Image (cartoon, rainbow, N blue to C red):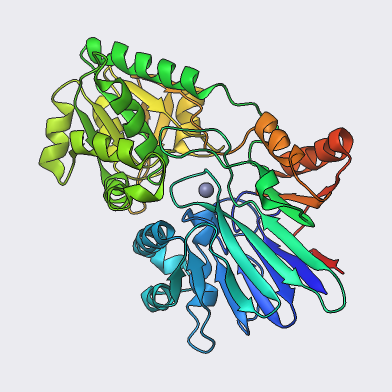
Length: 437
Ligand SMILES: [Zn+2]
């Protein structure tokens, strides 16, 4: 009998974790952290006979891994792509630096995790037990990201084939190609799918790119600064690739990259063969200026320029430093390129034109922003249309469980799958267990 248990990431974004058990072998797919929501870490699970597999580096999938794979008592191997390993190392160390006091693990657990990490390629099967194996398949979300296919052989029953989508995008971007059709994975018994944007349609990528470049151009031509607060992993590099694409069409302004986005770009530059937009990123990164210190920061603000800096929702990061400097300048603009979750400084800025700034060790202050503020949908998740189109291709009439989305998104996607395609589908709940054979 194959058993699947949802440990986290149900009806919320964050703390994703799903456990598959068969014949004594146990595989946990992701073990993330939530920065909002009711459940901050996944349910605990025994480390006995456990193998962990990581879909991608983002902390909502990886942030609690040291709790299980950092264990000294049972060695828990962690599998991921090579690029994901490099990125997760950077993100976990940064998380320790910023939030160390509130975490239930320390540097030594992260080091144990990294020592026990084995890197694999897309499509390379890993046999963890004579009856259980898994493989990674490009999920099109960020460089190095994967969906996870677990295949088990039940005693006296048929095999169970389980696909965990991880974060998924089927649209090609300048950085990564979208995930391929589900058909190539053959018959499936269970699909666990993300629901982040299952109630929204994204505009076309080309339209978003064009309007973003035009908004940048108009600010720069009037002598202002363009601040692009950006998520450090994936989004910042896509923005660099988009800007570079337009660079030789008369759009030739200095582009600066600061903070974690700079470090992540450096890592991706060393792995450009690992993702389709690698050559574009290499070219783009070769033409940007990396900011190392405060005098570089001052220089960036002294001329019409584009500055890409985390955090994407302006919750800390070097983007706050730039925003303080350009807030009073009506020629400048703040171009938001990611979703601004309710309660974040970015959402406040979009709604009110005011922003409350302050790092982890400072008193907060609220300032009026006279610079223009605009928002662009550069999502790297499937939207409503794409997720239905993707799942429609599924072979073998699988059961589908939805997760990684607000409750309404998870429920709407499950309902659409039942009503439109006749799938057995439901929104997963934390602690829920399904069995096969
Ligand atoms: Zn992600």
